[in-house]
Length: 70
Image (cartoon, rainbow, N blue to C red; front, top):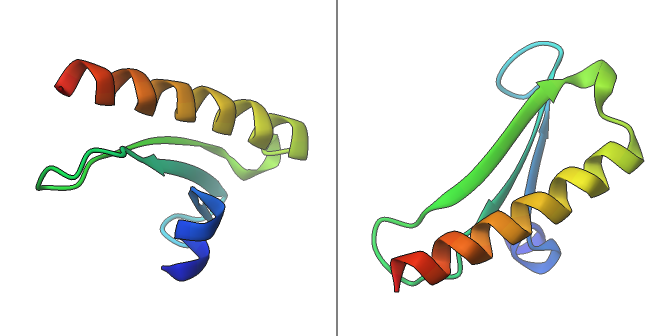
């Protein structure tokens, strides 16, 4: 968990399902339960550029959702 918190996101490559990669970003809200946004795709489509693009979009989505929940 320490690594995830320092990076600002969680990633999974075939941990839950074969040939599937996932990225998740937690919402900053301190509400309970804790919330996150997640994207999954075939592992074969997860390049470094794709990962960065998805993370950028997930962070933006998480910030927007946080703002809407205020």
